[in-house]
Length: 345
Image (cartoon, rainbow, N blue to C red; front, side, top):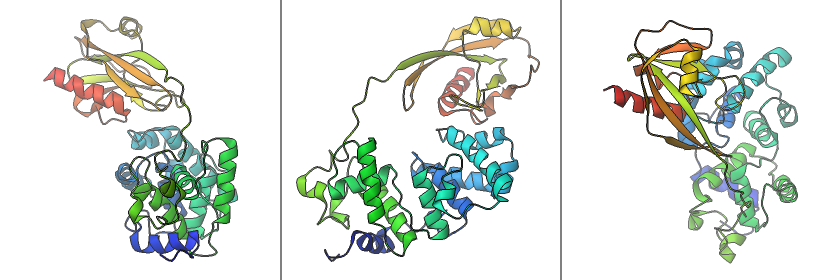
């Protein structure tokens, strides 16, 4: 591409010829679909999001349907996608759009950013794709692109560097073709200017990129010094009568909020509190799972009960073993249940 072309012109031309054009949420200006995809894509890769997006849309085809749905159903559709606060905020946001805005999404990035779960960058993306608004985005991929192309040092999450990046992002905006420009930034960061192995020769900025010229692709953007990751351990009682498994719904906030999990804590205390007697208590293989801010070691204990137990209070469910791993449980719990199924064979 001609060197004299502006950043935006180069990016738009590249996106139209080499960018992504077949994602299931593209080709629509429906702000509901755009919003749903943008929330799901926060900290989650496109390949992972696509099947969740399609299933979610099949069950909740519009904002009114989502707002009217029970939160438990929304959480279950989100199970396995992670970062469950997104699902709770999604539900709250849908209810606010219906109650406050008559079921219509606000038409500007500034108004969108006031809704639950929608930050400045996500609001700008929704406004650009739905309404063509000239608004800057600055997610993790965009920060990486700008830091490399313009040689911006420092940790991009720090206040000073982030302010500098926002100012730069605002100055780079084109006067038109906002959809192609915004999608181009996303595509470039996701497909070429990747974190570990950038494909510099195919980049539209290969001849002007500061990081490439100085051999700093691996060091830009600069990483934040990370403290030691806390380690946590917790026991889970896998209470089964041989055909069913006892699951309990977590509180709506906190870790795995709203999802179903086996009772957590000392197995003997759990059984006593639920008036159950075990014919077998046996520790199973531990499972380690990494979260964003800590690592959790799950210690499952098989608690086999003889008599078919009765249903307890609200929030407890006896789920058929064969269906338990897909009954709206978090990913590590699904792994434990699959191990339990092997034990039963």
